[in-house]
Length: 242
Ligand SMILES: [Mn+2]
Image 1 (spheres, helix red, strand yellow):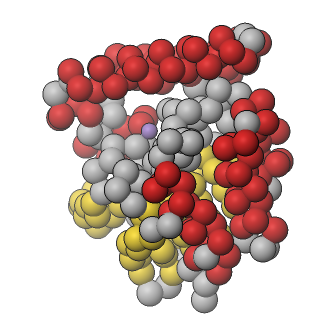
Image 2 (cartoon, rainbow, N blue to C red; image 1 turned 90 degrees about the vertical axis):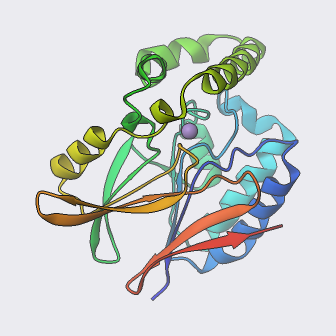
């Protein structure tokens, strides 16, 4: 049986040569032999609207995604907090299906919740206010009506602001909240949760209502490429370089 591959937080940008090379190698290699590929948010370090496809760098990534889809591999992409403006024109060009914020699938026989994961960081209240604003469809429309160069400026400003805020906040509030995780496991009746966002790769096992549940946190692509491979035999982490 072919494995399903899951990855997140690639933060691809023209200047991030290693991550880009690793992603291109992933798209040409392991992705094409997969049962399905799920990218769980922050594929791009910034996405300010689907016009970005016209930029050569974005075009090269879209082409690589298209290569996966054209090989007959179902490709699913969730929006992260950096690329929350990914839209239908992008998805069509990439041959991908955009995922809802939370998606429950049967993954190799295990009922699994897939998410970018930032909704679980409820201790960071200022971030949650920002997140709620960006996830509101009316606000997205408002943003997308602004000229592209204005959005580019806003995007750069937001990234600077986010870096400064993250550096200032205590480590503990940047991680997920245990209560929010427990609620999601119960509400969606899943045994496994796979998410990214926190850049704290790990496999956590917790008992909830007398049953063992697993939470897998995907690694970011800061040093090199990482993905999770899941099939009937279990889940394994893999690394890839360009
Ligand atoms: Mn994120």
